[in-house]
View 1 (tube, helix red, strand yellow):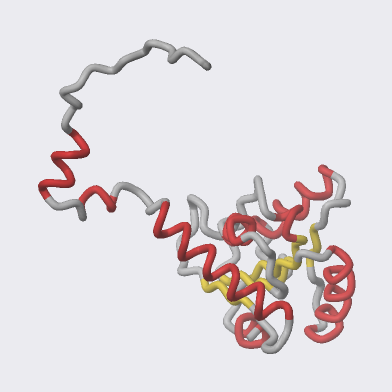
View 2 (cartoon, one colour):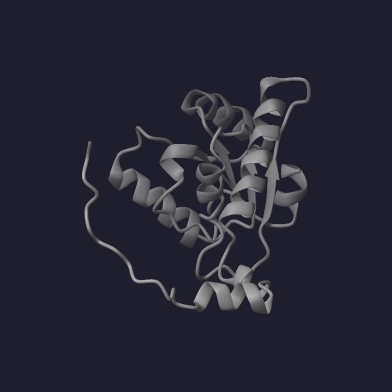
Length: 177
């Protein structure tokens, strides 16, 4: 997937939850593709972090691949130059993973972004993936995105929602026994 992506001139964010995995992945990918790979993790100093982001975003010759540890790269970054996002290992919390993915889905993104999530069958990862799908489904059932749920209410349910109660509210404290 990375070979095809690089041959097309695309750029990718590669998220891992383990900084140690990023330290192993960086030299492997650099050797395999014979090009530099950027890497941002929690121990990256603030000035270097900013320089990495600016280089990836603005330098026409910047590396095509940017590895980020999930927690270090999950917030506060605008990385719209990437049009691929890879999650090489899954995080237990889908909101954290989605927040990381959103680094590429920011104001200024002009291309479609493809998200790739790797899961090894028969492993704990597969169980995490199933759990995350269940959590996502539950979240969608209980907290629907936007106000679309309102448009699906029938007339009686909408009236019931918007009508004030005819009975007064009693604010008296009940006596305790």
